[in-house]
Length: 251
Image (cartoon, rainbow, N blue to C red; front, side, top):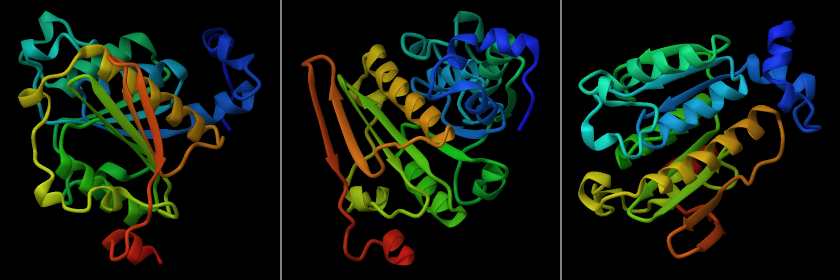
């Protein structure tokens, strides 16, 4: 375990007094590595919360650039970032906020080709994309690598999130999306999104990530759906699907 400096003891003082974190937990966070796929409405706040909490290594993957239409929900960016690489702009912001976190900015897509290099020295993957195919690729790659991951999605006025265990004992994303070819590819650009909804999902992903890195129980394989506009909330377990290519391989 890493030894905390006097400055770190001061920085993380409010976390250190929490019984579920304490000194050992903070050391675990500082020794952890997380890959965040996507640096948009979910990825920005997730990266900021995890860096703020003292996660030692963050790898950011996204091949997109900052656009004016991103600013209402991608709160790490401002007008001076327009046209810049999202991961590079976000990395600069995070570096200014907390030098304890080593930032590895990868301005490229996560897919079958890049997965191996992206997952090196990583303990957890967080999906912050707006892409069904990216989630399928994350599910495949993390299953092969024996890593847990946290899915997140936000569109219009509602969002959802799931924490998948490394062994997929409680189902996987392929169980949830039974017909990927019929699921459609419409995202925020086509359907719209309210900024705080993305923030809500990112907040839950961040809390689940911190709990997981601390070694605390998390609700594995449970789909959470929240509509803050109407005040509705639903949680349901994912059922392993017969014939699922991922779960069948894990059996």
